[in-house]
Amino acid sequence: MHVMAGLLRDADGRVLLAQRPPGKHLAGMWEFPGGKREPGETPLAALARELREELGVTLQHAEPLVALPWNYGGHELLLDAWRVEAWIGEPRPLEGQALQWQLPALVDMAILTPADRPILQTLIEACSAAASGR
Ligand SMILES: Nc1nc2c([nH]c(=O)n2[C@H]2C[C@H](O)[C@@H](COP(=O)(O)OP(=O)(O)OP(=O)(O)O)O2)c(=O)[nH]1
Image 1 (cartoon, protein in one colour):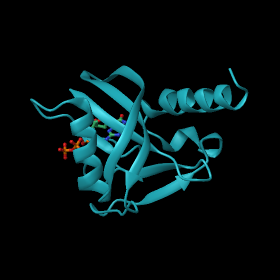
Image 2: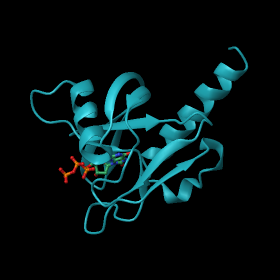
Image 3: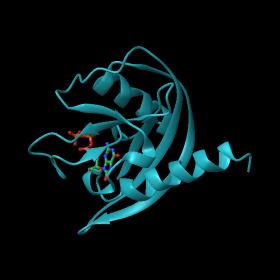
Image 4: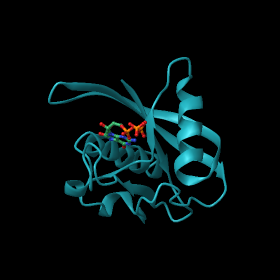
């Protein structure tokens, strides 16, 4: 299973988090908007579709950040996280999910899905490397 995750950041550098709805795997935990790639879809097309369905935004530009194999008790997935650099529209919770913008360094890792913790850490390191010119 190939799962796309989009990391949207606002002008203040905050990242968008969405809460997984009741009844789903990892219900109540916070994640990056996204979802499963369908057969025949490219990763970017799948990410664009998920962002349109979940948030009502049109993806304009995204760059791969990290792809992480993960195993949730026998349920294997590849979590493919992309930095969403440009989009059109204001993200809205079209599937009833709670949304929050949070500075990456201030996110309580315990509220994130386990696979998203190393992804957020990668984002934090990429941002601090960029800030120090490395
Ligand atoms: N979308 C998303 N899924 C994540 C993240 N982190 C993480 O562990 N997952 C896991 C949770 C699920 O086991 C799987 C994605 O499944 P999903 O239920 O969101 O997929 P979907 O949106 O296509 O939903 P559905 O068609 O099954 O209703 O990946 C993340 O940041 N975003």
